[in-house]
Image (cartoon, rainbow, N blue to C red; front, side, top):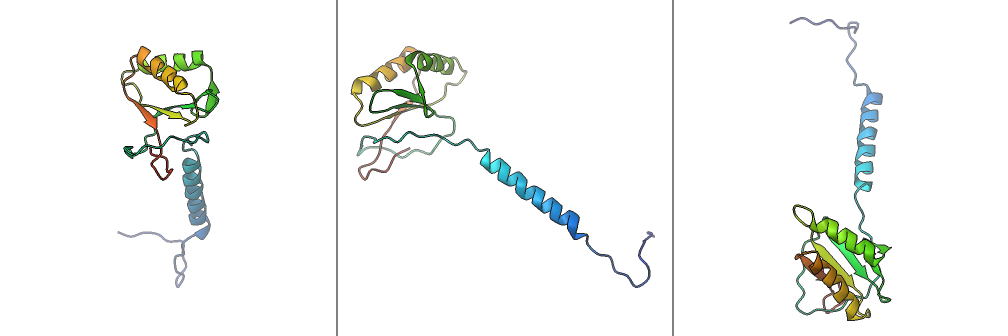
Length: 143
């Protein structure tokens, strides 16, 4: 098979570096943007209770995180919400085909009644897969 070439006799073919560098920069930008777009989980600064029997579980991205701070205020994924809003969100989760797993982060100094109220709301909506976020005896948060 014979091909034509625009090269004169004695000239060698060269790789065009400018388009190659452009492609590499576009790939770098693509990977940087996609890694930054990853959902960052907001966590409230809490002093979690210790548990000697806590089991470390793999981190899941589909967790519904409910935080109860020292003052008893309720937070969903780091944003403060009212009890009515929490109840509405739990109802939406319960209506899903496969309800999401729920994790309750309660500060060790919050009154236990605040945690019980959140558990009651979950039970009222029929949610069963609920976990409590604790730390091990060294103070390391267990997930």
